Amino acid sequence: MSALLQASGLVLALDGRPVVRHADLALHPGDFVGLLGPNGAGKTTLLRALAGLLPPAAGTVVLDGRPVGDLPEARRARRLAYLPQGAECHWPLAVEALVALGRLPHRAPWASLAPADLATIEAAMRFTEVLDLAGRPVTQLSGGERARVLLARALAVDPAILLADEPVAGLDPGHQLDVMRLLGRRAEAGGAVLVVLHDLTLAARFCRRLVLMQEGRILADGPPAEVLTPDSLRLLYGIDAHIAVEADGLMVVPKGRV
Image (cartoon, rainbow, N blue to C red):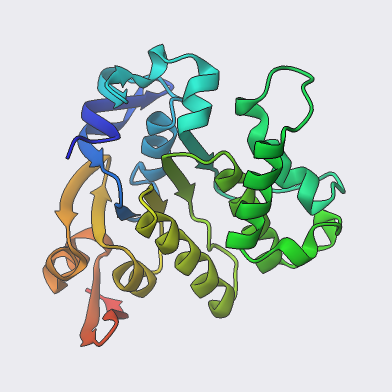
């Protein structure tokens, strides 16, 4: 199966300083991939480059067989949705109006929402279980509700690929499970999902594949049970951890610094 999005030999720099070094990563339909690593490993920078927001110093990012930077912006926005870390809503837009922004790449300037747009918006809200919040100002929502609304906006694009940077950060455990379940359902429906995470157990339980990064390099890429090992966690985070195999996946509990 050909990749929807593929990075090859990717080198990224910020202010002339190398941040990502010779990274190779492919996303295929149905992939649910967790991107893990310590702070400063280059995860967000890699995600921004995959979204076409940061030009590579070397290597390529290919979307639908073409360099992502060569694609017209509207076409790229229709194929790929990026949910940045700590996304906020500062205007009291109604939830439905915010989710409708996801349809902008599909509409001509100043065009009204077509019936197909309205159906996609409703489907995204129903999928993320925020349909009952449609008329509420987004600034009055809880953190968990707002996270699901922002996810609905990304899904309203109807993208083949969803890149999400720490979408569960700051959420309580119940809402973290909700968001991860929704992302998993998106992958099961045929989309490709890449999500940056810090919670090792969430990553191991929900993601089908994990990519480990350290100091800008990809150290491992594979199924959770093969990637999350005592040795890899010592190398990556400098920790000892208890790893248990449960019926629904691995449970990873950090025990202390090595």
